[in-house]
Length: 204
Image (tube, rainbow, N blue to C red):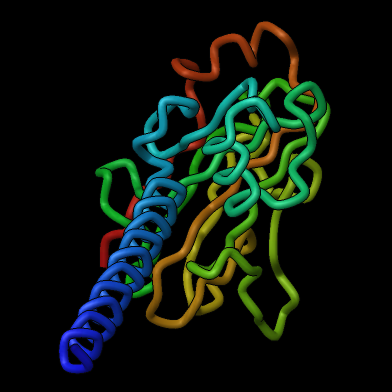
């Protein structure tokens, strides 16, 4: 009788241990799937793609939990879409991931972005600004050096190059963010197809 009771208790302990392990594994898998889905912003139906750029003209903050989580991770403190549009790039025009082992150029015209104000900023893979001795972090439509027709070239490089130079991290991936403030309605309505500044890998 005593032996039977001990065996029953042991069975219950093993059973509970298996249950606990199952619950821990289930929670871990759930967290892993959630992190993967949040990080997989390139496959999100809430964002459009135009060449290297991804973005949305109507981020549903608070309405779609997945989109809200993605915005929180990739665009913390983002303004509502009626105030600003955020476009970001992880890849060049050839769809290859941006990496500071290469240099890149962003070419365009200041007038092709019809907005009161816009800026281009480089962020490291950790989504923080890239530290550099020049304290150079971004250019906007007022600070860019252009030719007489408004054409510009921004150089993305770990080493200082050109007048419109934005530093990239040392041997690491990075992101580029294009912020558009108070864009004109017609321009914003065509963001998915309109011509935007082109990100090209520089030839060595």
